[in-house]
Length: 462
Image 1 (cartoon, helix red, strand yellow):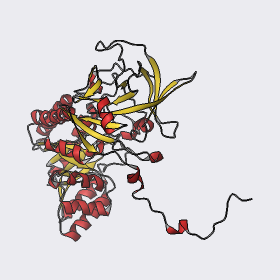
Image 2 (tube, helix red, strand yellow; image 1 turned 30 degrees about the horizontal axis):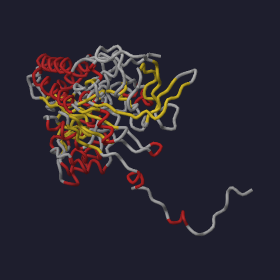
Image 3 (tube, helix red, strand yellow; image 1 turned 60 degrees about the vertical axis):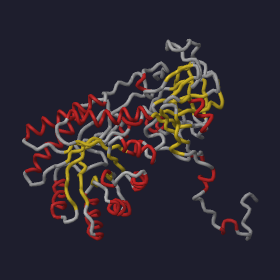
Image 4 (cartoon, rainbow, N blue to C red; image 1 turned 90 degrees about the horizontal axis):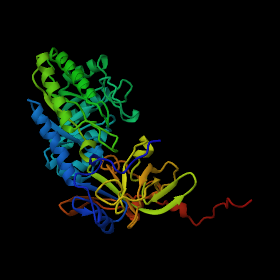
């Protein structure tokens, strides 16, 4: 089993993370002070890191690609009104995959025409919500969705612009649960008879307008090659469709760029990806004699993951002959990724000695398991973390938790979900309040017949 060191490179931490006399700070705010103010566990998001990543995508693709381009924030990575609005203000469109995400984007003040409605199983109510709002694009995943969208658009007298999600049959080397472009994936329409039928239905429709293609190959990808292979598949289809008088005006190559969770991780940079994709599509169009389509990418994790960290209170230490554990006040309810994907994280004491860093005195280190409080043996955040003395108020910070932690959080064991703050220039703004017990109970209902005065059998009696 690999040991997770805490002397990892800066890539796993927010750009503004510093260690000094007050311990770790992010965005000019000491993490200890934030927990004293907002409680624990606490999600902390660094505004500067979000701005840097989002800007790198927008400017990188604009520089590398001579045609029109757009970056869509895949809001499933982290979706709430504050985060969505911040990223929209940086010039990005928004991709949503459910009615709830659409409602969040609209509540954040994002214009509907800057929203793309993704998703492989949209309900009739969700289709109606998207049509009524006037979303910019529906990303259509399957043949039944075309039929449903056509029927509901016709019934309401509305129009919808369509991107077809294509399953390109490309194997991205990532965790099997987050590969989405291989031939057995549940996502997308495979080229062939099914795609031909989909295009025929769109050609015949008075309410649906075909705009182009989307190809997405997976998530947490460390190799640019699958993106370039997807571009080739998309452009080959575009050349074929040009002969049918169905121009591909927009080409969406999805998201999935990986980030570093430990010092061993070495993903491509945003600049590497945008430069390679922009060049490949421009040259591919030239070779095929195609006009340049609007080129789109959908990053999510790559914008918010490194910007985030989660601070925990250590509530107990447990030592046995087999291992020693730090038990914290959160876990799989606020971050299910280690349990779901065997995800690996780096962590540090918020105010303890860092050891072997050069910016703090070295101290004795030992190996700990960082375990959560859920009633599950699998609730382990870090299996083996080499840590110096935790010290101070006995708090730990897990780095790179900005993506798919809050989004996938639950109330398992009736735990309340943490608060979230965005920090920058020494200021902390609450963008998500901590849930209360009242929030947990708000939608419970107790039928009167369950508390009827009529006697019930005593099951404990012999």
